[in-house]
Amino acid sequence: MDNSSEIRLEIRSLIATLSEPLEQEEISAGWTGQAQKAMLKLLGEIDHDIEAGNSLPKNLSIGRGLDHWGVEDGELFQRMCALSNRLRELNRGNHPQ
Image (cartoon, rainbow, N blue to C red; front, side, top):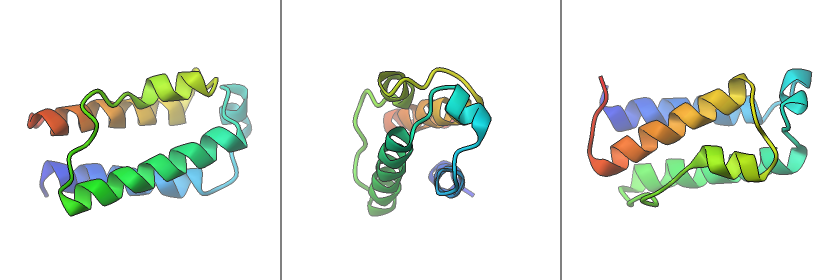
């Protein structure tokens, strides 16, 4: 499986997680319904762009976006930040091991 396929699997996993009601620990970390909907929309757009072969924004930083929404910690935040790092590497043409 190539890097973009692995990333798309993670995106779909995050979409599935975000499609469920937020858990209390995520709410305590700052997640709101608005942030949840915004991230679902963003992940859907990113997945579509990868599938279509479109370029992604050069300085994509999901963590900064989440910080703007008031999300500061938690497992879901960490997963989103890890995805963001992988997307920037994909965008640069690097393939992490």
